[in-house]
Image (cartoon, rainbow, N blue to C red):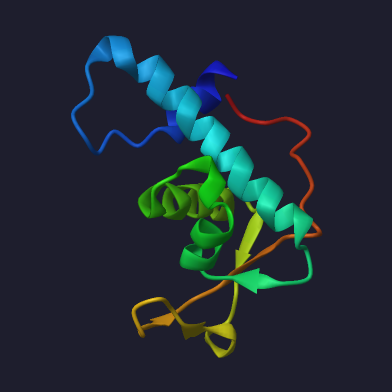
Length: 112
């Protein structure tokens, strides 16, 4: 899990070294919340804002939801939908959507 913690936190804001473990752990939990949301709705697609809006009890920032979706997409856990599934977001702009990858399989020999 140590390597995963190192990769999941995107150091885009200045954080002191002693606070990095806590920030990384928080990012892992946020990613789990987003993944569990998509797992709980496997037949639907969502914009990042819709995920943010429907998981607001977790007190995540919209940027954290976007980061989690990006990471989960890179891992193959989520699929970015075609433009035809886009819809207007909270501010009127067209937003892409994502859906849970029901065919995702964990790698047998993950690289370190």
